[in-house]
Amino acid sequence: MTSLKGHSGRVTAIDMSANDKFLASVSDDRSMMLWPTKQFSSKDHRPSRGNVNYDHGAHLKWSPDGKAIVVHKETTRTMEVYKLTKKEGSDAYTFQAAFDFNICHDVDDDVVAMGMDAGGKFIMSCSGKKNDLALYDLKGNLLNKLDTFQMTTNFGSVSPCGKFVAACGFTPDVKVWSVKFTKAKEFDKIARAFELTGHTSGIYHFAWRNDSARMATVSKDGTWRVYDTHGDQHMGQDVVMPKVVNTGKIDADETSKVAISPDGQVLALSKGKDVKILCVDSGKVMQELSGIHSEPLTGLMFDAEGRWVITSGDKHIRVFHNVIGFRKALDDFEKKLAEATTEGHKERLLQQISELKTKLKSFQK
Image (cartoon, rainbow, N blue to C red; front, side, top):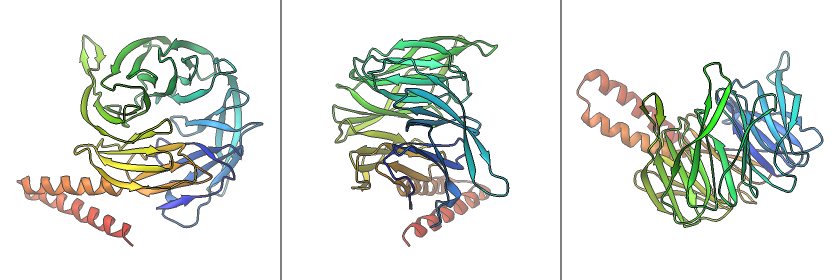
């Protein structure tokens, strides 16, 4: 669809705001940019630009309200919160450093991931060698630190619902913990929730669907898996019994990443500079995007509506139409049309089919 150009160094991380209106990015050139998604279809991209103070950002996350961005600064080993202010009479924003705090990991240990919960109650960081997963309140006070028991941790994240944190690495499973708060919204504890099992070797990366009801993994054993993680209520508690939706073979290495579409029907899997798009139901590779960056990917994600696959890897960010997702939706609507019994239902489906066909034709121009 488009390439977002403006950073002069490697883009290290990307994240989409909760309302899908802005994509944020940081680079090892110390810059931080805010890209309006409404400009993706235009050749004229006018991002707001700021600088990370005295360092560069290695990871970043939006605050749930879209008014701030939290940046992990790699060299100083701090988290810094930047508040966003719209410039009067324009669509541009300024970045103002509000405060920062030290992370609790050893100075010789790499931070492999950071996250923030959807309710804005805590920030997470995760280290690679010492296998520490830490939670902080929004003032930077340490709430809890636990051992991921991974020997080496490759990745960690906060679930989109904010109820769970998870980590993967050397062991052939993803370990997931629930984060408990009291009714007064005070931190209570972290408790083991469930594990994603079935791989026979370490897991490079995993991803949540945006409702936390599915998770996808990619492993050193050369396979990917999609799990149903929809929870049930039992004696007043959320209970998750993960079930494998599908699995398949994929060429993977330590650079591999995975993302799952909001409807859970499409997987994006990367290795190095390449991305493969798969249909979850059939397990088939439907599209291959080769050499889309000059360096291995640092970011891979879908937007919240499943319109785009977004990647970062070198100085640029690429935005691709989720063609496979639109085709899958078209097939589903056509099947529903054949089974529809009321005229009103048929009319709605015909309208949706027409809109999807028009959209797919526009991608071919």
